[in-house]
Length: 139
Image 1 (tube, rainbow, N blue to C red):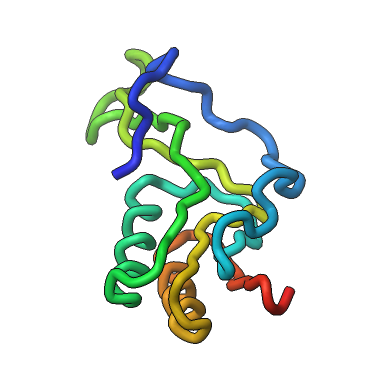
Image 2 (image 1 turned 180 degrees about the vertical axis):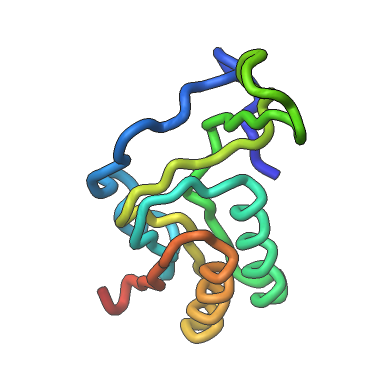
C-alpha cells in the first residue's frame, strides 16, 4: 500500500468545515489516453487506491501502463476499541488522499479503448466517490 516514506509530523489535524471548490491541478489527462475523474469530494484511503489498481491490472492482464496520480499523504488517527473519552488523540491508523471534484485519479494507456474503459469502470466501483471515465479522443 502507498504511504509516505518520511513525515514532518506524525499526526495532522482533521479537515474541519467544508472542503469546497474544484481541483485546479490534475484535472486533465497528462500521461495516458484514458482516465478516471472524480466527480465529488472524498478522502480516498491507501487501501482503496490499491484495490482499484489491482482490479485494473488484473482486467488488462498486466497489459498497458497505469498511472496513479493521487498519493495518500495525510495521516488519519483512530482510538482503539472501547477506549474511554479523553486521554488525547489516537494513534495513526491509515493514510488518505484528499480528492476534489475534477481530479484525474488514474490514467491508462497501451490497451484498446473498450478494455481501458471497462477496467477504469471496475476501478470506480472500488472507490468511495462517483467517478467518470474520460478519454483524449472524446472529451
